[in-house]
Length: 62
Image 1 (cartoon, rainbow, N blue to C red):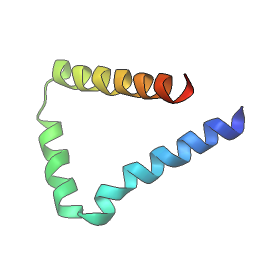
Image 2 (tube, helix red, strand yellow):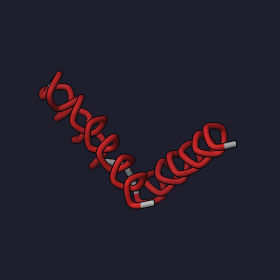
Image 3 (cartoon, one colour):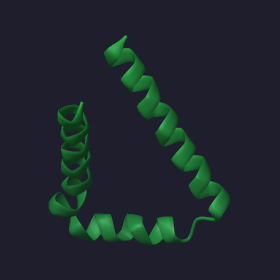
Image 4 (cartoon, rainbow, N blue to C red):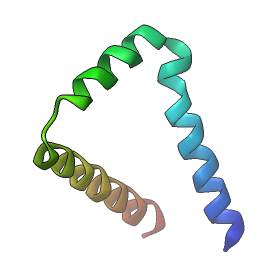
């Protein structure tokens, strides 16, 4: 079980590191835009991300 969790965490870190590595300026501009969003907009983005992850997990595991 822990192997799967650590593998998932490693993949998240790899994906999270791709944009700042490939385009630091683009990542900075995107982050500045995210900082201007309201709490409701951020929650909605978080919910969409969470649901997309759950759907992907369900499709892969099912």
